[in-house]
Each structure stands twice: as structure tokens, then as C-alpha cells.
Amino acid sequence: MSRVNIRMTALCGLFICFAAALSAFETWLPPICPIPGVRVGLGNIVTLFVLYLGGRWGAGQALCISVLRCFLAALITGSLMHAAYGIAGGVLALAAMLVVRWLMPKEKRERYLPITGAFGAIFHITGQLMVAVLFYGTFSVLAYFPILLASAVIGGAFTGACTMLLLKKMDKRILDGVRKI
Image 1 (cartoon, rainbow, N blue to C red):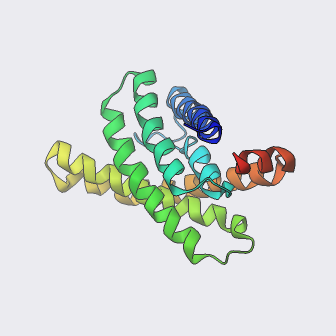
Image 2 (image 1 turned 90 degrees about the horizontal axis):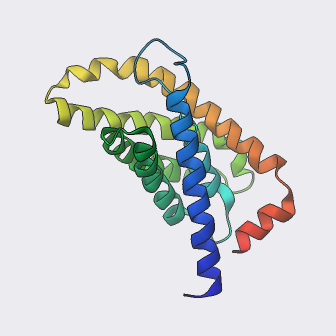
């Protein structure tokens, strides 16, 4: 393994841990809404960050971070059932975010991060509801969709805006160093 791959692997591990910690932290916060399942999705900030980082970072690393974050967060919180929901939602969300990023003009793509985050969140809840239909064996869980859709748009736009601020406010030298790894 070359030195560059070791650095990228190590940094990917740090990103996975940070994303899992944000996800776990969010489960311990008081609910933002009295409806079960409504969350902001703070762990997705790391996935969006890697997806928009550029350089040698892209969809493969973002997928790795998204999937492994779900496993690690499930282990931290003690709820392995959340891993299935998270992985299904995370994979669909990443696919949606890749499409949105591809559709946006290349110059100033970061400007559209709240939109990208919102679409990612919409597809995340779609994946989670698909898993719920499989687990519970009924389509009645889809009655949740309108409420979760509204929360996904708000939460996804928020995480996208947080990612946009992170990319704008981080020291350029640090960002360039990470991009070159």
C-alpha cells in the first residue's frame, strides 16, 4: 500500500468516526419533534463534505463513510436495527446527492449544497421507509411519509447549509492538503 493510500485510509477512518459520533450524539439529544423518527441527520454533514471536497475524494469514499458510519453508530447506540435503516437510506441518499451534484453547474456547486442535502434527506427517508415496509410487512408505515418528507427537506437543507459553511470557512491550506491526499 502506498503512502498516499495509507493517508487516505486513515483520514477516511477519522471521517467515519466523526460521522458516527455526530449520528450517535443526535440520538441522545432531546427530540426536536414529538414524532418518532424525525431527526436532522447531522452525520450526513461528513458525507456531504467528502462528496464536495474534490481532489481524490469522491463517491467511493462518501459511500464508504456513509455505510460504515451507520454500522458504527448502531454499535455505539446499541441498536443494530438502526444499521439496516441507515444503510438503506444512506445508499439511496448518496445516489440522489450524486445526481443533484452532477446536474448543478460545475462552477459554484457548493452554492447548491442545501438543495443537495434536501434531496439526499428525501431519498434517505425513502430508503428507511422501504426497510420498514419489509420489516413490518405492511404498507401502513407509509402514512408517515408526508411528515418525514417535510422534516427531511428542512433537515437536509440544514445539513447542506452546514456543509457549505464548513467548506467556506475552513482554512484553504487545510482543505487543499486533504484534497491532495
